[in-house]
Image (cartoon, rainbow, N blue to C red; front, side):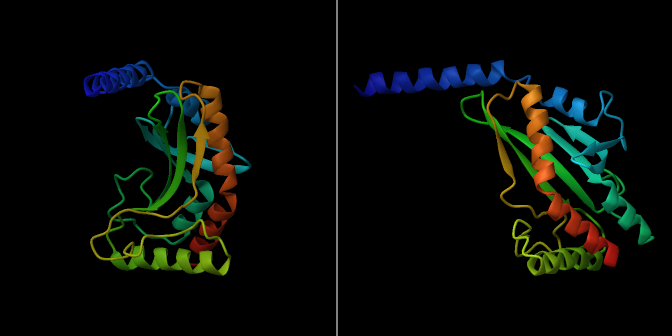
Length: 202
């Protein structure tokens, strides 16, 4: 009985591995090219749900982009963002959308996150994080939450969106991925607007 059970487990594991391998080429790349432009040119401007963004780069199953409103407010500060020169768009903040594959190798989900990045000035990072936290509490936007040590010395990357996942039925379906990505980004419009407002006050 134990031998039969173990063999069943090994066969199932092998099948899952084959499914994952078969789906190694997902629809993610095609989806992000549909959203951000077929050539994926850095700083390509696109519109999603009425808000404008800059394409900042991509890796396997991940795409980075920056709300143009955030960029404009950051530019108004007249600061050289030391530490961020080679980080995505070169600013201390970014949005990241990532696709994860479920164990069945067929379904999955998209996760959207906003991140405060590696600004070399601890005071700048801390001020940004604390201002966003305070404004989120005042506006009852509880999907913005930082880790308790987000502003501590030594921390370089701090993500702050919660309840930020949307399911995918088929990771090879680029149309579904594209539609779900747009829906996810649009759903977080209040949080994106709040961050832009906070940056405009600094």
